[in-house]
Image 1 (cartoon, rainbow, N blue to C red):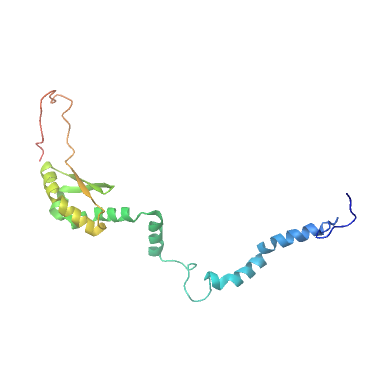
Image 2 (cartoon, rainbow, N blue to C red; image 1 turned 90 degrees about the vertical axis):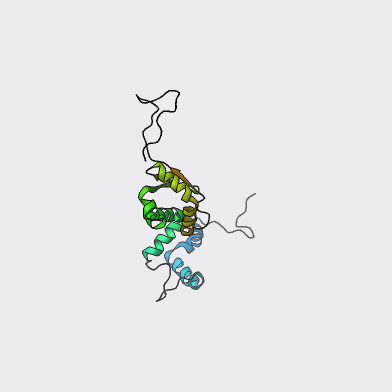
Length: 175
């Protein structure tokens, strides 16, 4: 079925390509720099982007605010507070305890503390509820649930000339 001209509601196709050029111009009109500028001016009060003497998010930011936002975005707040406690360990537990006990790690609410003797390990186990309470005051309620007290790093007597196969063998005489 052939027709000489365009039917009702149809646009004719021109051989010179002007109809295609006009369609492309209409389609990309909103992406030209001038059109984007017009849209920005029109939308500027609604988006809250005003120029002038009032501060906004385009202004240079203070380092403290930028770092706080970075810590919040990555969820590093608790880790930083825990490491801050590690740095102030002596202030939090006292000079005598800090001289013989050092925090090693913190994970899942459990703080691992290494002591320099078994006597101090026993002492710290007795002080654990007080230390947990003090740490939770600093870090937030329920952050530290338990303290895992480790004794000193000692040589093992499992192998070598001083090992006893089925007997008890030497025990802690290091402190």
